Image (cartoon, rainbow, N blue to C red):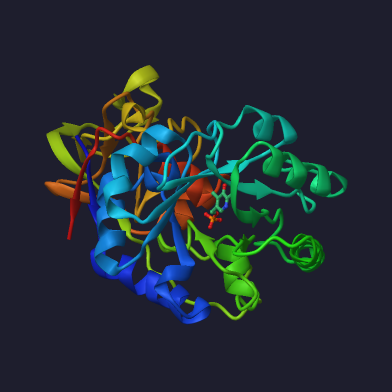
Amino acid sequence: MALIKIDRENFFYNLNQFVKRVGSKDKIAIVLKDNAYGHGLEIMAELSYEFGLTQAVVRDIYEAKSIDRYFKNILILGDRAVKNSKYSFALNSLDDIKRAEKSSIVELKVDTGMHRNGIALDELETALELIKSRDLILKGIMSHNRSADELSSELFWQDKIFNIVKERVKSLGFKNIRFHSYNSASALRLDCKNQDLIRLGIGAYGYNELPEVYNKIKLKPVLSLWANRVSTRRLKKAQRLGYGGQYIAPKDMIVSTYNLGYGDGWIRSNNLKVYIETLPILGRVSMDYISLESIEDEILIFNSVSKIAKEMNTISYEILTQLSNSIERIVI
Ligand SMILES: *Cc1c(COP(=O)(O)O)cnc(C)c1O
């Protein structure tokens, strides 16, 4: 099995960059959905607690249950609202409001332009009345930005619309409501003063996906992936390696097999020339193995996944979240 090392110091460093932006630890909800972006749900929950965070965001109740001892409040993005003093539930539609259990704590999602989830602007009054009449406890109003990490002005008009929503909700007499619409990229680009909370995901894990032109806040990747040597052999020039014999040795060389494969969530790149740090993967990725021209016992697959993500034509989020839960994770 491969090995994942979680760098506590880097995680705390990243969190501190965002604390500086929002002013307090209580205004950060660490997003731990999808196994904490592949980092390990429990490990990251415990580290967040150790750092002093009190709020988290997950995808469903199962994730929430396994970590709720670490937090004061957990926002659940995609599950039916049920009564629980520690959980609040994002309501993504009028139907979600109708389905919610009486007395559950809810946060209404408003669609300010992404058109993925949330009620439409002209449903706002109806939604708020329905929440009242169904005896739900409204804790928050939230939204999500569609282009926070792109070089465009889209983020600004969405932000404006959210501010209008905020004024409308306040003018209807709702009090003690928290308003939040920022993810990592929004929080890096905009002033966070008008947010009661930021929902911090990828930034906490050390990736700043903003284009270079923005004044970059340097973040430090938290997860590094390692593999161990399984066996070593001599290849003669022109011998072919692995499934399909796709790799043809250009010279006599020494190659080793390492214990990482697509069964561990590593992408089975067939034709892509993927480099592990400086070494190319030789031939096809197997279910449990890759071959490299190396004799090191332990080899670093990546410290930062950005470059590999680019080579694979995807984003860091995808490679990280796919890392199998069964890979051992240790904190360093
Ligand atoms: C995943 C998610 C976030 C976190 O986004 P990052 O870009 O990783 O910071 C915030 N809000 C919602 C609703 C999400 O689904």
